[in-house]
Image (cartoon, rainbow, N blue to C red; front, side, top):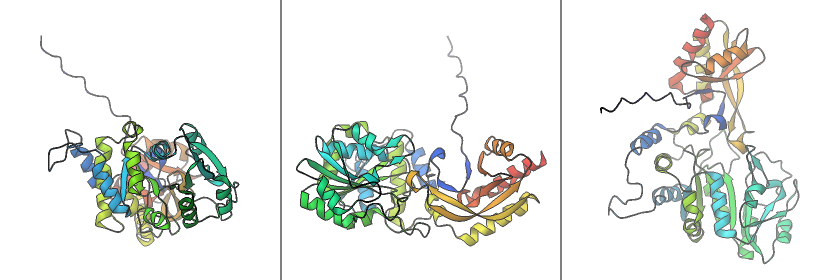
Length: 387
């Protein structure tokens, strides 16, 4: 009997979107868009690949060894390993280093990220025990010292870009000295993943290299935030502590797959080639020239017609705790009779465009629109205007 032809697959529910919101790391759009090199790497890795084979010898090698070596090089760390996301990096670290021990954290750093991730709740799922130090708005070195005792297994500090100056008053260097005195590791849950140099848009954002230089034993970051890569979690720092994480049984449950590895390695490679690699879309958007943004907004508004005009606006970095960091930018304000309907039609269009909905107009921030899609966005708006 002949085999019947396969039915065509339905369209994927995941559609590519032109991000015109001005939010660079938009959580609902998948945070960091991948570079061309990372997308090609994912395509190349979609078939059989040398995921756990050393091409030079043909022997087995851990799937994390390649990205781990690259991450260590990029961050200037003695060692590094990778897991499938930032929360997993913390989960594995707590299991590997603080089982049946206490973890001291400032009350002001018991954060909630994206509604579904609360630091106290995550620690509660592990064999570690949370000990709170200080208060929500003041945590001093003596608070950490008072909270620590022989059962302490780790000092944990969490980066909060949104905290006010009256929050944690203890520097990373001071915490490092205390951790060394107590004989426990200092873990910095940095999150953002910025390797070293600061883009002009983020003058106060700490880097992984800076945290390690200040004395952190381990730094935990996400791959899909300021690093500009895929969803992943990176644990970088002391070789013995990284090895403990890699040996833990939970590491297998939290490991990356071949597509994550391919995209992450391509992203990390870009960071080895330039101090601030412009081929990464996140870097290009954060470091965009305001003059160029203005020129693009004016050109696009002129092409859209009399109901469009270039306006100053403010975007955001996005990405959970970075969401409060604003970015001066330029946008096209499009006046229309029903902004809500236009926004819905834009998102359902070809290509789909996600814009900001204002009271009497739509606002399309050019910072997050790839320059290669300027003409596409113009044509979509002209189509709506004609309809």
